[in-house]
Length: 502
Ligand code: CAA
Image (cartoon, rainbow, N blue to C red; front, side, top):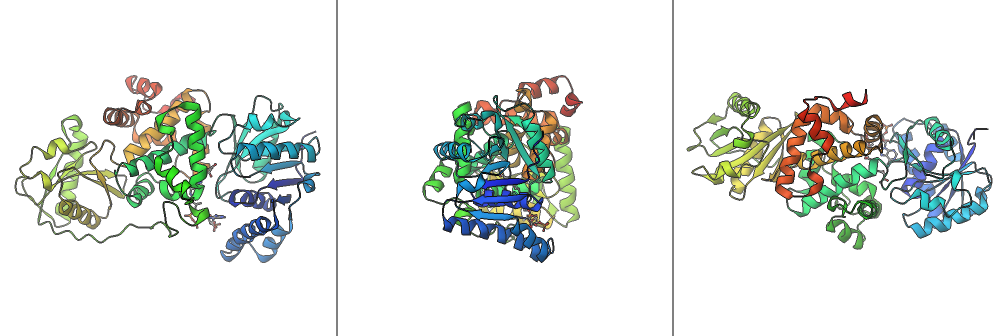
């Protein structure tokens, strides 16, 4: 008979465990919350009271509903209290030895029919299951932070999971108001396998001095439409967890892209773990909603150039003309390139070659307009700080948020987004997950406005393929080579990658 999951245990009431307990309690399910000692138990209770209190203050819950939710959670420090649970979800720190010891205990304490689930984000569910006498009743049930808000649950079945159990757990996830995506047991599953390499790459680019923390975050929020920038998100996930996931991915793939950025290791070693410790990439302050607007443009004359030879397409020339027209309409005077105080090269590729052909290369900046809101302003090694500052001020007047960066392939958004989308194509090509599941997972697990395949279609397969080729040419990292499928689709003139799945 199918399990009805009347009572559920949650072991570990840190940020994730408390959030998971809240999700079950909100769905009317009785919860037994377990922590190791009374102090940790009180902190766990505090997480639950804080989160439901926040909903109360926003008018999302009544006092009676909050009391009912909290009343469904029994707090204990004894694992023996899990004896009658139909399901136990483990959410303890990501240390295999802890998990193995815990699952051995859970196996002993819980009734034989109980399902044992791990919320691990990076460890092998199969290896955890193998410590029990019931590997067929063990699954991954992976929630996303903040658990009460993010609508995805990854259900992980191993080679030993009983037939039908993953479907039962997926049914439970639906009862919780979540959307399940069922996957096999591979490091990082779908979301972390795609998300963490992108976040890690942002940390690597920060270390390379491509741009600043705030500008990279702004570029990805306003330019790519992600709900949070990579550094704010790393701080939310926790830098220790992020480091561990990258390490697990690297152990499996040996790809440089997965090797944790040194800055992650340094921050973790220093105990700066992100929100949970009060400081990570951010120092406890909220990430700025809108970056500073200190720059005042003083350029009296501006010249606008189109793209470089390699990028000198009609589209690039058109973009330059349109930009020049907007400048004139806003009252800026244009001048021939020899005389202008500021030269703006509208380009998707680095502009140093254009700069060295000018009489005043220090006056040139690269400009890439991303979406409706962001303008990437690229400084070459010759650009004067004054010219870049003037360009930023001018873009603000035109209603764009400027993001400063070095003159490198992809600037910021392309450098981060194109490899991220390429990873999604590679995942699909490997047969691990369908395009629909990958799109659903990234939309509901990370709040993306569109899934990676929807984004690929929107940006254009050829543009992304070319962006990847440029990145590869610059950095020679093999993981930037376009996925063979992407290359073939462009060669075949296919416009929508999602046509393959219909
Ligand atoms: N706990 C409970 N509820 C929370 C919350 C929290 N920590 N943070 C926000 N909320 C709720 C708010 O109460 C609000 O709900 P209502 O609309 O009902 O009032 C809602 O979420 C939106 O909150 P805000 O308006 O304050 O904030 P926002 O619009 O900026 O959204 C966000 C916040 C939902 C976190 C959003 O920025 C987002 O989606 N970020 C991406 C998060 C993400 O990618 N998570 C996955 C990380 S990967 C992972 O977790 C897996 C792993 O193994 C590492």
